[in-house]
Each structure stands twice: as C-alpha cells, then as structure tokens.
Length: 79
Image (cartoon, rainbow, N blue to C red; front, side, top):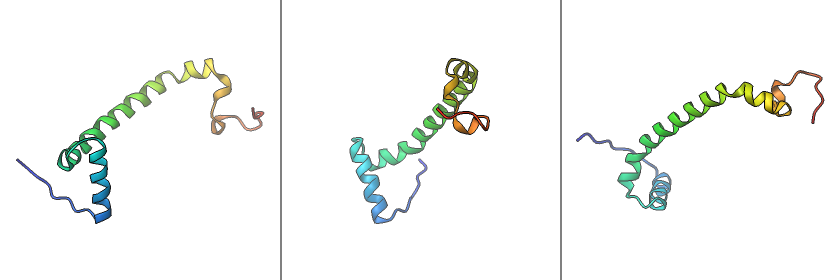
C-alpha cells in the first residue's frame, strides 16, 4: 500500500497530535482523514454557493434592506 512521509516541526506535530486526540483518533488515522474531509468540505461549499446563487433574487426581493453595502448604489441612505 502506498505511504507518505510528512515532515512537521515539533510545534506543528504537537498541534496535530492534540487535534487527533480531541477527535479520539490515532495520529495516523487523523492525518489520513484530513484530505478526505477537505474534499467533502469543498464539495459542501460548492453546493452551498450554488444554492445561494440560485436563490439570490428571492432573498433580495424578500429582504430588500439586506443588500450588502458594497452592492448598494452610491447615495443610498444607510440604515
């Protein structure tokens, strides 16, 4: 089975050990799971952003005062 050697500073390794312990995992299992969790997180973010974009007009119509300041026309009164 392929493997990977990763170099950490002592401080970094201590942080990773603490994170693994906090999740009740071995260091090996924790480091193995990190890229898989990141892939799941990125997929979640992509879906959430797409959902938000699809519903942006509905939100803007329902909450007209909630337009972010950067998107407001200049001269609009601040709330």
